[in-house]
Image (cartoon, rainbow, N blue to C red; front, side):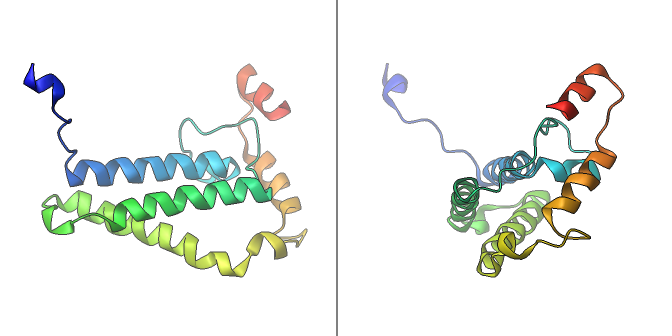
Length: 142
């Protein structure tokens, strides 16, 4: 009966690092699904482009801030798993780079129809999006 009233055991730091990193990668490709075709990430949406509205970008920034705060709040002296430590360093660096790049407001100046703008992104994504199955073709049309 006492066990039923106790709080759950804390998740170990290495497991939490891997969970945050996985959530970040899954979240990244949900936010920017058009980038998935360059690397072949499984389970990313294939029926839409990423949200570029102000609300979508603010929501994404809030998620990144939350993941980064979780990583920053960890006691790394408790991590003995080298793979988890490397995952921490890589994930934290990617998240911090996203935060640091916000000042540039690249969503406002990537307008080149030849290379960096949304026009190029649409055509380059559609050029590599799979269409082998009926489901893949339906996703392209959606």
